[in-house]
Length: 342
Image (cartoon, rainbow, N blue to C red):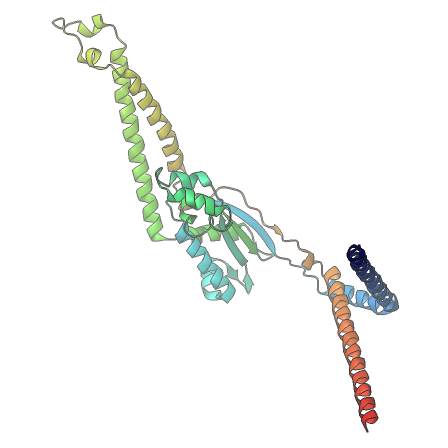
């Protein structure tokens, strides 16, 4: 009986300790909030001065010529994604280095003005394109798809970039950038002799395949025309011979299926041929607009920065003074203990 009583008393004691600890944390929080509020109330004159000074500085430092940006949606043909990405990254390096000679030659610099500040390209991920480019019995595809659920950057890595057709380029330019800047960028991306020859070869190959498909379709139409005529017309003028076509063509439905397949294939090939004029084709109508950001509103950001700086300095001063007081108290205690010993 006594053991149960002592156990209950112990549990009640633990519960009271937990409640007291929670109350202490609650009271400490209230005290901290009060101190913070009291600090701002006491410092209202300083804060007001900082707001006025910051707003004034922000007003006089407002950029009259803010940066402008746009997004270009492009189509990259001939599995040339890796080459185009490399060309764009090299241009970005030259922009960072401010290589005015090369940039002026390419149309991105003139009269001390850099028309492009930054470039960024990323693929428009299409899982179907990866599946189409992978063999149906390739077991690695399933593994990659499972892994992509946990690694967001896997499908946008260099391994898959050549598989994607459509990509997005984010261009941040100067206030004076214009449509000429966009045209110069597209000209730069397509200015590759090897890719130009590749584009010509692809166009010739597509045109040849389309012509051969139409030729095959024409042959099939001839067979259909012959097969659909009466036997009397087929044997007219002959020694009562029966057309070999009429006798042997027993799977005519397969020819109809093949014709439909070729016609569908030609539709896709003709669309491909239509988009093969350039390695990189612009598919939207980008328009440069002012890049807006909270950091650009300097009449707001400057006062906030000054207030944050003031609060940080005040905290440093507070903790420094607190550490000094603790140090002084310890020195006094040490002195008293020495005196008592003596």
